[in-house]
Image 1 (tube, rainbow, N blue to C red):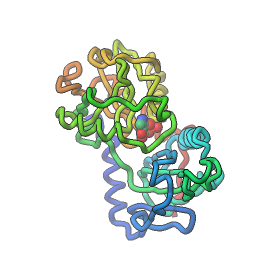
Image 2 (image 1 turned 90 degrees about the vertical axis):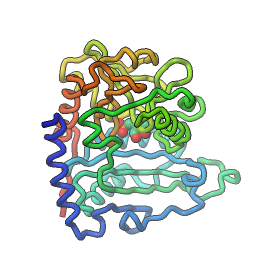
Image 3 (image 1 turned 60 degrees about the vertical axis):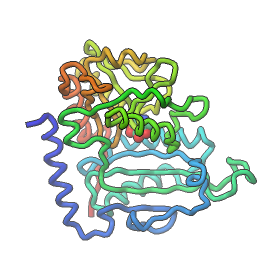
Image 4 (image 1 turned 135 degrees about the vertical axis):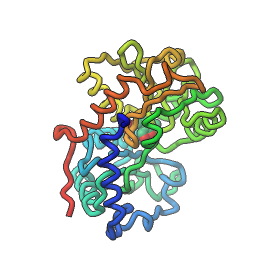
Length: 320
Ligand code: PLP
């Protein structure tokens, strides 16, 4: 028995059920301003600055066992990100929420990765002021994606604190605005793999940890959780982890975290919507602690998944 079984058993049964479905949306559904279409038929206009210049903001909530998890947190962050980039959603928050819920219901997908993207739109940017463009919204729902899946979660992932790649400075790209300018992360992934690790964690180039390729990093030392404050997306999963820590009576702090703290940590976790709480057991080729998934990571993992059934932070989907 692994500590992960109680959540993966139900998940596998739901995936097996979904795979039997003949619903054309069962592998994914998209909305790009018109009718709902199967995800693989959806397209992006070539002239969209979201595509040409990554001029966009986006967000990714998830649905777990038929319930949206912390959707309002994701909508809040998405709205803040759009406003910082002077993007205006072509649809209201209410319409956005109801379309997302409707799309999940139409798809029959009970565990979903949901993406909403607001792009600058089709005008040639150098001829028009950015704030004058008609912005576009793209929505998609697909089966849940795992940054690290069941097998890796059982034993723990391996990370490298990469040396040749640093996180893009916050004065260039605001990391609190969720964005798809992944140049540093892609380079970091390549470097991590060269170093024999699965995932990179990037520094700010000045001795502080930032985050990994699509996840926040959380260290545990002497029963206290710490996670970097600057140079990072303010993750919704990290927020859930801190709520879990409080329930367990653990202290936590979002603060400047020196690179050296990672090497002194008792336990390390990567945390993101696509995968949840993912324990790390190897850092730069060496075991963290005894190289096993630690007791506090397991306890937080369980609190995290239990919260997916908490009516205070979930919205149930009425499937057809
Ligand atoms: N950091 C980055 C760069 C991300 O892209 C993500 C999620 O994709 C996260 C952190 C984790 O954020 P959340 O927990 O809200 O999914």
